[in-house]
Length: 446
Length: 150
Image 1 (cartoon, each protein chain N blue to C red):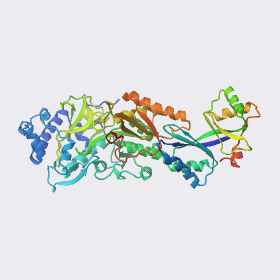
Image 2 (cartoon, one colour):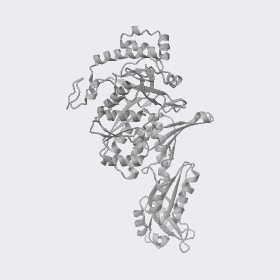
Image 3 (tube, rainbow over the protein chains, first blue to last red):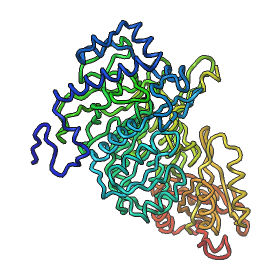
Image 4 (cartoon, rainbow over the protein chains, first blue to last red):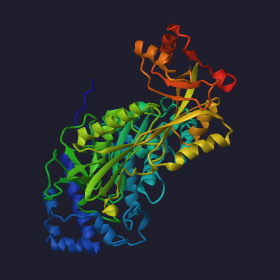
């Protein structure tokens, strides 16, 4: 039995994590001081913020405690789109050293910017993330997040490098080569999206590589919601510990929060990213422990200060102390985004619920996709599931039973009947970044 | 008497899939002894028997098809009314279920060759042999391919 004294780091901790253990009161002081600075920066340098703060009658001199935060206006994704590309920048280009942009699936991408100091903070919180899962300079890290405009690649890269680990910048794609490098280079940790790692597991099987026999021990997975069932599957199939990391480019990129070795909630690096949970309907701040939408404020960002940014991610701030000894607060794992939710016949459904149903039915995780269509005004949901060798049988009856097993498991969780279609292998497009689980054709069909 | 059957998954609404599979086999000069397609509203399963099943399995898998091997049993059936009765009666008496069956494309000396899929082919062979019925005759791969199936 190990006893952990509150606020005292475990022996052998990495000095990069020092701020994870700041006593609570001291942390609140730091947060208030930085919060005032960031609002000032926004007010003085960004016309949209000036207008919003004036409209809200927010006087910076009245900002005396963290209780005043709830009087600040929210910022939403549309604000970034509406001011595309540079409207929210609070620094001139001579101070800005890098730009990133979101994939922009709907219309224009959103653009984010960093000063040198912003990059240093990002790298620091990313280092703290990797240190929290037990990684160190001894690690050989395969970074299979896509390099480029997406923040995942460079974020994980500089984080691992900052930790002193050996980074293999494979980026996404070319799966056979990724597996060869993983084996030949003795990779001990990987960073990528969970869906891409599932793809690596599948391909390793086909190539006759047993991931469990390789030195890889840890995976840090993020950029999309994934379930506990998926974690168990990954850990079992690859013989690794799988950790959840959280971030978004609007705030900085990966490393806003990350699990520690306890694998129970993600510590938010709240000396730089201030978390609140709100009721998405009433916009009221909810007490710790209650579930709602995560709202984040960047406490030290210079290039684009984000004030009370509505993430659309549904979670809660956890109230219990973490056995790891970190004092920074944790959020529960994000199983769903209010953006991912779709409504079918009046029922709210999240893709993660379908994933759980598939795992319940078959104890494995084949590639799947949810297709929504509308015929004569009636919504239909079809779950397409790719066959795995274990699932396939030459008997029609066995295949029909499998189909029924899937639809029953889905109906049990979401209470509506979904058609299940078994698909040939590799017939559902695979992503090397974020998996696209829902194809909504209802607008097109009418 | 036991043959290796290849079962290939054919997805719904993929009219080219059957052609693609046959094209791959034709391209490698693989001769099919028989084939049958089981189809439902949702999907199809193509079942085929060939001497070169190993090569066929590799080629089809590489092309992205889901392929599985199954052991099946071939029996000679008199080409006359009631020709199957002896076999089916023995199976029924021994409580052995026929999952599915189909015939070979070419008869042997005027007799049909029927392929049976049992859950346990070895038990089915034992029971059919035990019956001592001269009307029950197994067909060996050698008879079909001219030599043993690999």
